Length: 110
Length: 114
Image 1: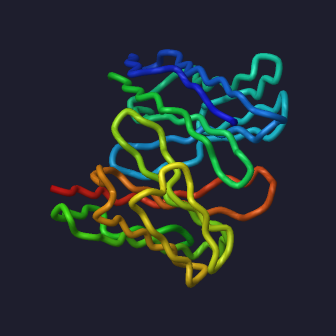
Image 2: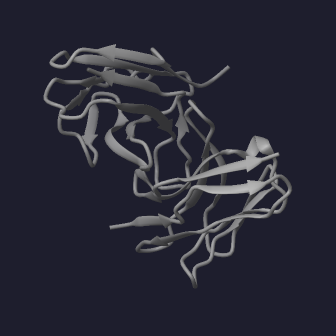
């Protein structure tokens, strides 16, 4: 079946550092791909998405490009802030539902 | 404001008791979902519903039950048959269809069973 694998955390960074969270997927066809973010004690919020190969999703300084050749959808941000501390989930659309990665906890220190 | 509400935010129950978690949405979405989240793990799908009066089991449905009598509401009952009910429960909704429709999540209910 379709599945997502994302890099394990936790990840700890200093403010203004570069962030990359790796995500690879296994799927038949070309499913839509998503990054969600979860702040402490809250539900998930959609961060960005891409619906086809070579699409780039972007939001709040975060970017991810749908790479068919490497079956990847890595999340990047050039300069993180303390407020970016959260858990990040990669997900793919599998028919009527989403399949999630295990989540990566990111802590940004001032 | 459109969105998804889950209540209560924190819920405590004794072992052996059934408990029902509420989920309401005013986004006019046909599809609704229940997920369970455990520390260090991703979200696991419990049940989902594509339309009123219809629902399907997800990956971990054992020990849970749902109903979908109204478009806006999708309550989840955690029964005494669920072996490890303590977890964070998230409800979501979306438009139906084969498109790239994202799911919108509620704030979650943290259930503790002792």
